[in-house]
Image (cartoon, rainbow, N blue to C red; front, top):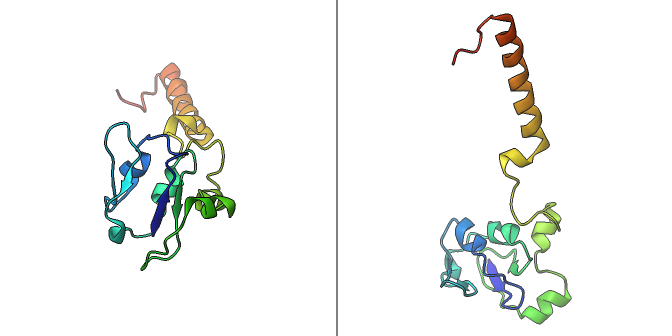
Length: 129
């Protein structure tokens, strides 16, 4: 269950608010999001995964709050620990890459364009406009 948003680390980007499937957070423009509906948290970790600065802590307890202090969580290096555990570490910008940013997408696009260009030169017309 979501337990903490670090007011000192949060950049107020709103990604946690946007990705939460159960609308746990509220955010006023330019302010740190607040945990408004904690009991609605499904412990899906999406907010922690997408936080680009590791300002969140989601406890693995799905049915109860555990009540944590930021200092203790930070000392135990738990802020953003789930994101790090699944490989969304530093440099990931807290998001999945957009399709055009991946090498797989770029290679696929190049492969799709290559046959089209070859068939157009031959006049085969396999790729109708």
